Length: 438
Image 1 (cartoon, rainbow, N blue to C red):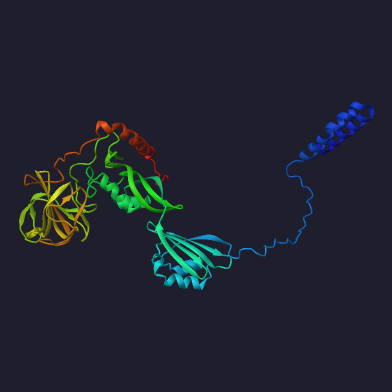
Image 2: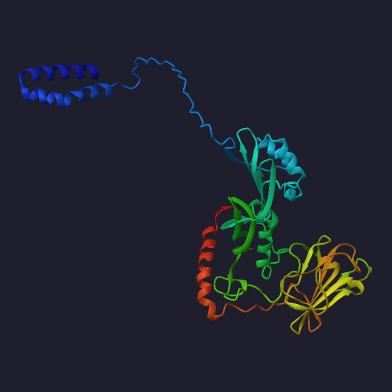
């Protein structure tokens, strides 16, 4: 119907054009749009004739390379390492067809980093179209291994990698343990241990964790050409434990001394850590009546026993001086530290002492002083920890610990400039379900 109407309109316009010169000019202007109206006036679903389609194949001549062209013109290719990979299997996936190169890399002592490939890392190779290996790059730790071809020989060099620093943010929720939660958030163990260290004076990670506790962390990460090499320092963290919010930001003063503070400038570090172990569980608490498993009699237990595997690191709970390091009766291998003049801490049943530890040595808070064992009167590996004030035993889980000094007025402005952006990052992720934000 619409097509027929368009045809009638066109005929009327032509008839008018014969009678009037001006009409002919108008007709010339509007007649093309009549065709458009007819073309777009097709109703949906109208069957139209299908256009004829034919396939045309033509030969296209490729340009010829000049006679003096470079036959070694090549490209870079990258492959992610898998468990059980060898240098030969990786080169095969990279489509390297160069037996001489494989044999040379296998027998070159300088290429020893290629003998123990780390799953998840990447390796890059420069190869020709024929599969000839020209160069190879592999990042091992903080070192970049570079293999270059020079004729029939290969040179292998090792140099520090140029690392790029990025600031990452992640959050997680406790379902079973801190390590399980950080694994779920794709955080390294190094970051998890730092989180525990930062809040160790307020939270006992052996007994205070609850399902549903949450954490947020802002930390440094180091990259090389887009590949993460290692995690760095925790810059800010928040931990919500049993509904109570703990926050910490890192601040380094002009003298290069750094520490963790609340966003208001209060030092979160106490004079003593709550626990000398990073992760463990209490197997026996402070009590005046306990049946001794070795002596088979009831007696007071004036310390805390932490069950942990042999070799677990034992840390000094405060800055101090080594008063004794050796074997002593039922304590077995024991370290005694004196802090200021009133306080002493005891670490018993050790399997070994930290290297260089001796009477009179000064140790800072958190430094490893020994390793868990089962020496002395012990039925299994654990740490016996005592806290004494004026040589009187105290329950280290209940005694009130003094705080370290806060931010001083002289550095308050510099602290606020550094702390406020970090606190805003923590606020950004609070209450979210994000596991990662770069």
